Image (cartoon, rainbow, N blue to C red; front, side, top):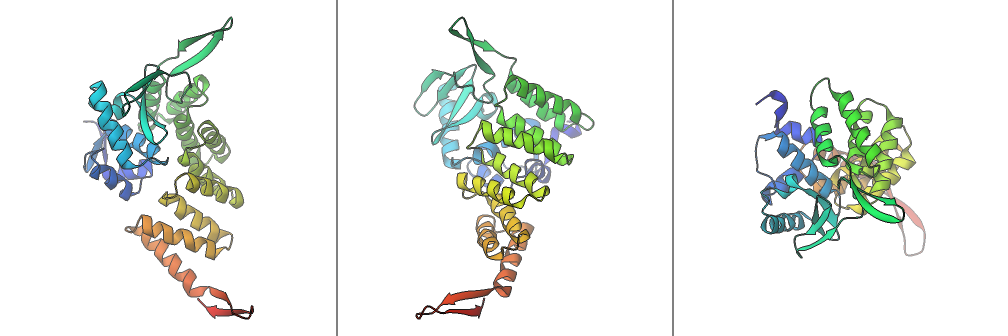
Length: 305
């Protein structure tokens, strides 16, 4: 295979910005096969799992929905052969304008203009009709492939922009385009696309996390903190959001607030260099802070932390 069609484990973690803990959880659940090298299709599957993980849905629920979809549809890999979307506490699948909940075996025509449906509802003389756009899903996969080919990043940007012209609510395309701008240090354009993703899908924790990152780069710390907090409201166990929020609090000289998120990060991701740094920061704060206590008589005393 060519160099661009295989990805080592470290590259996958870097490209998708995944904690190794998350990848290991998917492997244990059988959602992906444990490997040291991954194909492009496996990278796409991991990207879909990452997006689902940025919601409140559990790995167990994803596994159950995938198993059920395999049984009712005959698909080998529903995560690649259809579009997985969150519906309540379960995963539903979109394909050719139909929305399928494999757990209940219910199917409905999809008029909701979901980001990856590839369908649009238009009006003609008061009558609703469904007009299929070009297959947005295939366009999206092509854009992802172009991102990974050296020298073709401008084509990837153009592909994402074309998707967003057809479907402005395509949150995943907005996120990916924003990340290209972020890596190019075009923070204004990146912020615009991350906000577009957050508006399109207010339950998309990754959009708020990425928005926090670009606001942080612009030294707009209050706004960055608000974005990270929003991500954590949506997904309290979002380890990377705890880490970046702790950094943001330290930058505005709020070490006690940072402490809570350093300790949360180490609980969620206890191994690796980032966990070591988080523990070191927490220890430093506990060593340097002077903690206040209130006596029974209402007087405040200071003691070493």
